[in-house]
Every structure is written in C-alpha cells, then in structure tokens.
Length: 301
Image (cartoon, rainbow, N blue to C red; front, top):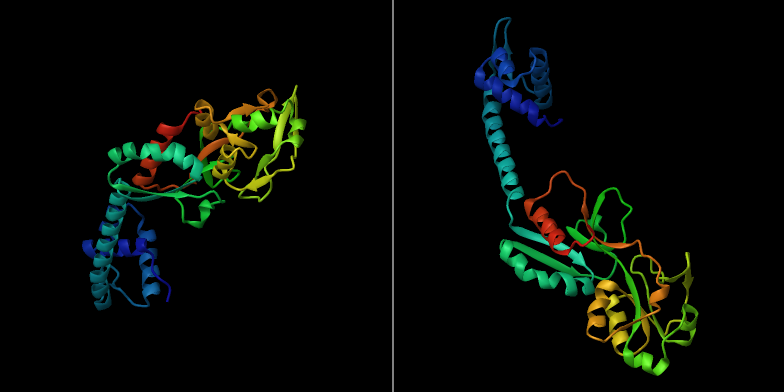
C-alpha cells in the first residue's frame, strides 16, 4: 500500500469538516476537479471507500468517519512539529560545532569566548582543535575555519583575513648560523618543512624575484604537519620555518622571531575562511555564531 500524501490528507480533513466539495474548494482555493482527484487518490492509497457519493451530495462513509478522526489528530501533530521547528530555528540555544586549527583557535578564537558567552549564554560552542583535514559534508561539523578557498559549490566560504606568510628563525639561531642572503642560501641552513594535512604533500617554499615566482625545496631537518609544531621547533632554535603572519606577528613583536628573506616574499592569494554548508534553512544559533565570528575576526573587507 502506497502512503497518502500529507496534502491529500489535509484536503480530506477540510472536506470532512465542511461536508461539501464546493465549500472545501472555496476554502482551499483549488478546482473541484483537482479536489475530486485528490480524494480518489487518497481512497486508492488507503484501499478504502471514504465517501458515499450520490448525484447531488457526498458524505463520509463509516471508514471515512474513522479516518477523519485520525486525520485531524495527524494534522494537529504535524502543526505542532512545524511550530517546534520554527521555535528551534528562532532560538539562540543549543550546540554549535566549530573546527579550527589549534594555532588559529588558540590565538584568535579563545580570546573571544568571554564576549561570546556574554552575548549568547544559551549556545554551547563545541570547539574542535584539529590540524588534520576535516570534511564538512560528513555531518559532524557545523562550521570550519580553513586556509585556502574551497572549490565546492555546496560550501560557503566567507573570507576572514588574507594569508601572508613569513620565513623566520630565532635571533639565537641566526646569531649562530647567520642570516640567508637569498633563497638558495637555505641549503646551508636547517629548515622545518610543513606537510599539508589534506594532500600529505610538502608545502612548497616560494619566492619572487622581479615578477618571477619560483620554488625552493630545502633538505628539511624536520617535517611536521602542524603549525604549532613549526612554531615550537623555531623557538627551540632548530632552524628556519614558514609561518602565517597571524601566527608569526606576536612572536615578531616580542622579539622571539626574526623574519628573513622578506624582500623575496611572493604575493599570497590564499586566505583564511569561515566555511559552512549552503542550506536553505539555518538555525538561528548557527547564524548567530557565524555573524559573531565574522564581526570579530574579519579583516578581509
């Protein structure tokens, strides 16, 4: 037996309530032919005669009277479910799962949480510090902060900030090993490579001379897959590493990191983005977190 449509059940309930096809068509704003077809479709789905028809009138059969009671109850439950969803969509309570790299979360998101708590006391922010690749489409994550623009039409990527990169080392390391005068001099230095979590490939070290961009592949002393680990190794005087400006700037400001090869830096077109699935219906708790993060973090405008 095929399941009847909710619309046909709704039409039936109006016919049962008004006791007239003409009155029901006027209330529903549908044609008599369309309503009659819906009633025949419903009877076929239920495998029961729901009406007693004569040339001039239509009345509920015994089965129709019983079904009308169930239909009214079903529609009431449906209306309640829709009301509950509307209330849920319009409330700023519940849990929102946000995934970000540990370095970005520590520097940029954790300092915002006191203000977030003040504005949204009913929202629990489940913050996942993950340096590996995260797939938004697996349903485990609501929001994702990712480096690099996504080429996926189902994902909205809103720019937070540009991604400038810095090659740097500690003053102590440079005092011992000297500062490289050009990228080719990196062969005489200890370097720290970064393995991209998604592709598992080494991130290329790129430079620019005049308008020519070229890559250097140093023989890295260490290779890691976390920006935090690059920072830690740099601060342990273990060599020259590549950090994004957002992570490097506090270390530059306090004198713990000295940039090198600054005249050789190419323009970087990549950025840091707040990503979420494109959807027609978005809970208010999710839209509230999105707009909060955009207002607090975005420097891309």
